[in-house]
Image 1 (cartoon, helix red, strand yellow):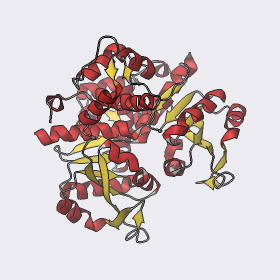
Image 2 (tube, rainbow over the protein chains, first blue to last red):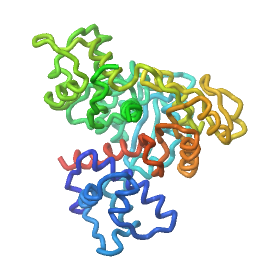
Image 3 (tube, chains in turn blue, orange):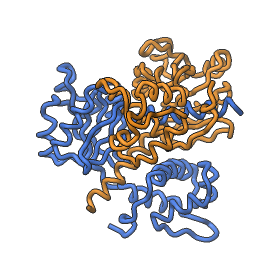
Image 4 (spheres, rainbow over the protein chains, first blue to last red):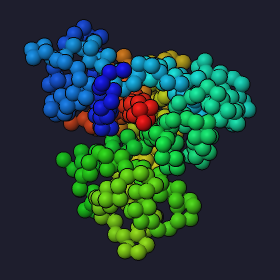
Length: 214
Length: 214
C-alpha cells in the first residue's frame, strides 16, 4: 500500500477520475501512449487546472514535454479508486435492473465481484442469473456474515429497499450501493452511495431548460 | 413559467434536490405535512445551511415554526427540475440495461417519456419491449427529426456508443444520457449527462479504503 492511498479526494474528483479512466482506455485502444493534462481537460470539457489537481491526488509523475504515460495513469487510477482487488458483493432484487447489473461482467474491473443474489420470488430462488446463484432473502444476513461480504447492492422496488438495507447491516456489510428511489436510514458507520438514476436524469432535464432559454 | 426557472443551480444542488424529492415522498407517505430544513439536513446527512441554500433556488416560502409544506416543496422541486412536462426520448441498445430502462415506467414522473427504442439485432427489431416499439438503428435519425425528439439514451456496449451518439446528433437531439462506459465526442451545443455506473461505484470503492483505515 502506497502513501497516496491515504490522501482522500473529494467526491467530484473521484467521479472525474472515473471519467478520465474511460477516456484513457479509449485513447490507449487508439494507440496513444502519452497524454497531457490539457488534452484530457479538452476532451472531458473541464478546466486543465482541475485535471492537474485531480491527478496530483495520485502522485503520478508527468514529463514536461510528453505529459503522462497512459498506461501508468490508468494503473494509478485503478489503484487509487480501489479497483485492483475486487470486493465481494451481494445483490438484492432480481428484477430487470438487478438482472442487468448481474449481467455486467465488467464490474470486476471496477472493484466489485457479485457472489450471490437474493429475491423473494420463488420462481427466481434456486436459479442462477448470469452465473450468479439466487437465494431466498431470509438467508442474506447469515450468508453475508459467514462470507464477510463488504458491499450490498439494492435493486429492489422502493418499498422493499429499507428492509433489504437492514438485513445487510445485520449481516455486517460495510457499504451499500442503492438504486432504489428512496432515502435509506442507516447507521453512521455504513457507507451509502446512492446511484439513483433520477439524480443523473435531474441534471439532464434541468439543463434542457437552460438550453431552451438560449 | 415563473422567475425561478431562470436561476441556474449548480449540479450538486440539482442532485441533492432529487434526493430531497425521494425523502419528501417517503415522509408524505408517512403522513407528514410540514418539514424544517434542519430535519431534511439530518435525514440526508448534509449541512442545514446547504439545504436552505438549495431550497432558495426554488423560492419556496417556509413558515418560521412549521417549516416547509411537504406538498408545496415536492411540487416546486418537480417544476424546478423540469419534471412536470415529460420530454420525448429514444433509446439505443436493447440489451439488459436498455430493457431495464424501458421497463422503469416511472421515468415519466422524472421528465422523460420513451417513444421508441433502437437496436441492430434482427430478433429484437419489430418487437416491443415493455410496450416500447423497437426499430432498426438505421431509422433513428429520420424518426428523431420527424418526431422532434429531445433526449437520446445510450445503453449500447462501449464500442457502439459513439456511432449511436452521432446518429442522435444528426437527428437533432438536444441532450444525450449516456450509460456506455466510454467518453463521447459531441458538438458543444449538445447536453451530455454521463450516467456511468462506474462513477458512482468509484465513490463507493474509494470510500471503502477510508473505512478500512479508521
